[in-house]
Amino acid sequence: MNEVFDVETLRGAARVAGFAWTVEELETLRPAVEAALRLLAALDDLPLGAIEPTTQYRVL
Amino acid sequence: MNADLAFVSVTDLARMIARKEVSPVEVVRLHLERIETHDRSLRSYITVCADAALAAARSAEAGLMAGGPVGPLHGVPIALKDLYDTAGVATTAGSKILAARVPDADATVVRRLREAGAIVLGKLHMVEFAYGPEGLNAHHGAPRNPWDAAVERLPGGSSSGSGVAVAAGLAPAALGSDTGGSIRIPASLCGITGLKPTYGRVSRAGVLPLAWSMDHAGPMTRTAGDSAVLLRVMAGYDPADASSSVLPVPDYLAALNGDVKGLRVGLLRGFFLDSATPDVRAAVEHAAKTLERAGAVVDEVSLPAVAHVAASAYAVVASEALAYHTVWLRAQPADYDPEVRRRLQLGAFVTGAQYVRAQQARALVRDEIDAALARRDVLLAPATPLTAPRLDERQTTLGDGRSDVRAALIRLTRPFNCSGHPACAVPCGFSPQGLPIGMQLVGRPFDEATVLRVADAYQRLTDWHVRRPVLA
Image (cartoon, rainbow over all chains, first blue to last red; front, side, top):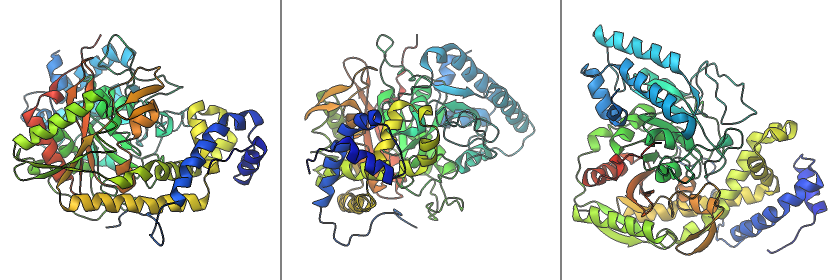
């Protein structure tokens, strides 16, 4: 994934999450969001299958 | 007063106090004087509990004179990262948002340490809400790394004050917390010992969270033996923390026999040693040889799955941190350090599915480290790939290319937050600039005893951990 997002797209995503951030704030965040999404895309390529997530690491 | 006393180990200090060779009042007063003298420039403390510490010291002395019971830390002063709840004393997480927060009760581990006789000197500086490895804090300023009087250098974070205070002799021991390396990074940059125990070994009840599934509470000390003493007191099941383990707590100090003969040590190549600067790589390789000469069996191992750690840890920490901060981030965003606010905001762009996939990826990392440790007792790697950068340094050169400082600091510690394995940072050398170099020893889950045994054996063979910074 190497997408570029405009501020309106970010504003929509932020609103879904319950935040009403200004255009200036979103512009500041935009490069970091794009970099983060590139990073997270790597997770899609992993053979995770039915591996159980480690929501509770090791209950003993 | 004798400054050497400020650098006596916790183990020896407890013994000296129990034998009435030194008074707890004298020890506490010495540390308060050192804080008064040096902390204006070092900035390691947010709150100094001078009156309460002196009162506790007098009480400890009276108890000793009356022949009362003596706990393993009777009269020994410690200091706490300012995210450990302390009854009646502000616990702010280094923030403006919680500046007026005064808990009613101690965190479980603080209560256990007090019951063992420890005396709380004060609360230590930290990165706001523990969200960052550099040690910077826009509200309070950064504590100063004591190892370079000429150049302001990062102390490492987020337990920045803990690293500085212990290294500078302003506390014999401190508590830190570690979500991506926040105990081991300042330990490495400040030249002290820092233990991140197994996830579940130490209660997090009453410790303000950054990311619940990655947070670990642990000791920061000058020796592995001191970490063993503190861990024995801190560890164990706590009904107030659902993730705490019911496994019995061993006598960690008894495991420190100085012997590593036959122990199998896996030196982590690839992702770990390749990224280190030449000074750090040479120091860690030399440490491996030191252990080998002492009888350990050293081989090399790589962990390819750690390549997934950056994405996995990012999704987990960003999401969990945002979940904790949502209400404040909506109501008073301007009260955050701008850089911390930016990191929190990024969590809004991680989806639920990405969070779960990141938690799945953690299982891959955990399983690979478990497999490496099935044939070895401990793994050995640099704790940080570089020594303390300058305060204003944003980019650095590592063994495998350019990196921003933040990513570099956290790169080698974070895998073991994802996996939950115990990891202990130990000083293993100094750079030509006189800056400490730290390595980390990683063990099997709940086998802190072996991790500390190797760390202690190494410290019996070397003197890196007893060197002191020259304070202005």
